Image (cartoon, rainbow, N blue to C red; front, side, top):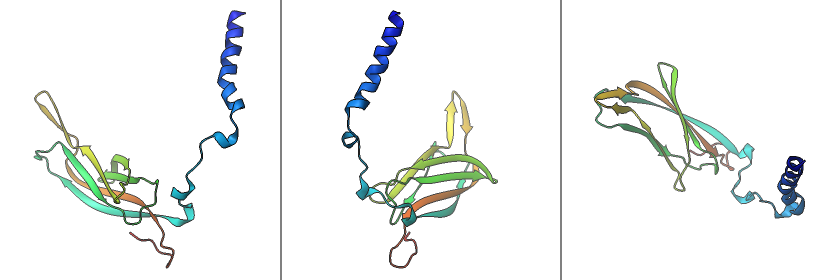
Length: 140
């Protein structure tokens, strides 16, 4: 019986705040920063990357800029080797329109060096941009 009363009390404490708050007191969206979906276009860039086996650096980086970036949309980075996916990431666009994504290309375990990335890769970069309102094209 004590367990039942405790469960009812706990459930009522969880539900009580939702009954007492009006809808207007909840969080609101900042509409000024959102872009309607019909004004956003996805831009795809393809670059090629070569990571040598004797690279002294343990990290590599994909970086760039987005002109006219759609606010709230990350840059998506997809790396393929021989058509097979090997790395996926998304990174935020900074206020100046730049982005960067670091990733480990080799690791050391004791005396053993492990090459995570080595050779030739295709990098696909997807950027969300706001469509130009004057010509109906995208600005990149």
